[in-house]
Length: 332
Image 1 (cartoon, rainbow, N blue to C red):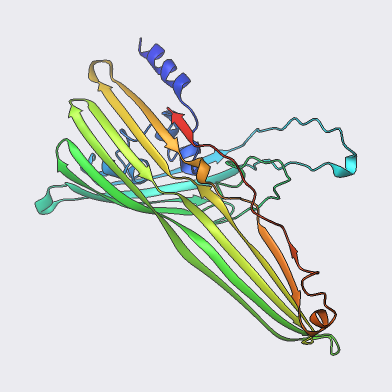
Image 2: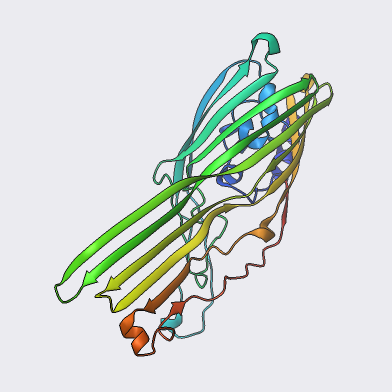
């Protein structure tokens, strides 16, 4: 009976359509349970799955894990046009990363009713990599380079009553802004001045949850994760002999994870030593931005303007691509 129930639970699990932690799992337990953790997580991983669950374990906890994934995704395409018009596709690469975290219940007068946790996911190859693929290239938008980001989560929870806990926290990524300013003198074949500026600023999104225990052995959890993304901007200005001004602007949004709502329930069947967990989630993919980079070139200066070619030589990749994604329900 127990084996049949376990097999049925595995058949019902579905991949989450959100962040790297939700797709591949935050720890082995989460992966094995199909990430149905909103009503189950009771260690540092609750900072991601449902912060309210941090109050369940009344002792200090420290953990670490390692994940490695080797995608075997393929694209079979029929192309009838000329060979020179064929556009090759992009496939997600293999990746690996570490996760580690700490959980600290606060004792004393509050009797372990408050808990805080700090956890992180650390890729082994790239701490942070944004990949903007041309919209003409077939690609797996939700899997392409999503694992290549260093994620930090901090959360806290409060046990209001023995049957009700609430929690909240933040998920932190980063945004990248920079500028390049170069002045050239062609007659003297030298760079007169050059300046490079790069700014990396944190971008935080909210994580919140509620955990209710209406009956002995039954837990019901609700969690929300705010959308998070990496925005980058790399404007470049090149001035040639005060005659030609070349302004190149590259910007975009990558590593996007959508707003996510999750309702889960878990029941512990003590006589059978069996835990049954299920969830219904909803990912707001309709709000996803265009992942392809925006690229513009503005040519000006005395020479270009004098010849009346300033605006005629400007280059841009047009309006953003409409993805037409739909919101995705997720059953686990």
